[in-house]
Length: 278
View 1: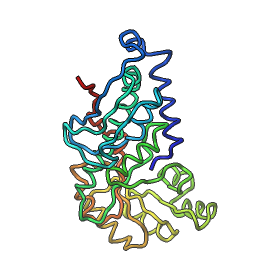
View 2 (view 1 turned 90 degrees about the vertical axis):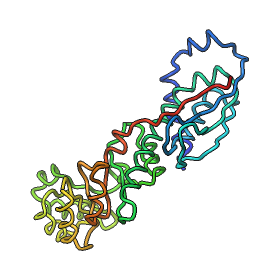
View 3 (view 1 turned 135 degrees about the vertical axis):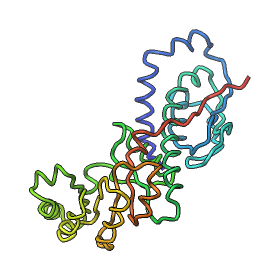
């Protein structure tokens, strides 16, 4: 579940940004005592995520709003399915609509795209994970959406685990030196991941005690060779230029994890709308 305080804070910021000093259009057209009913509806097939934020948006404008969920985060919907029924102040529903839909369509899009990647490698034993390529301020929600789509999470932040990339290696003077230096500074409780982009770098990283090898921009054929050389001595993670067209071949190489930045930075929004009852 998403922490309630994070949902509350994010929604309050979003409502303040969107409503500003007031909803000019709605306030001019609709009296304060007008009540209505409506429904959140999926206009295309996908996986839903972000129900907590949608409800918090409507109730953040008017706590008396009734938000009746008909499905849960992680559920699949078809076009035309009703996600939730909402009733209460027409002014509140209209003023909160865009914030609620912005969260839901974005998070549901991430969940839906993640679900496609997970389905593409079904039976391989590999896991689809996200990256830190998230929108500032929305990481916890985007990574939650990945889980709703059947994926798993990589690091949430720089303090989660040590991840040595190419510029770190250059600064430290080599792969082995970088791994040993991080290990000495962090101790046995912190996992160390190191990026490699050539087969000949693998043994040096393993000898230095790496926990995870990030195999960067390798073809499925080269990945299979890398997995053979690693031989279970570290977690094998494929990364770089992963797409729905090649993810099955990448998984077939035998890697343990496939990290996909597109899950969060390029997922198209799922089409969800609020329709008032006639």
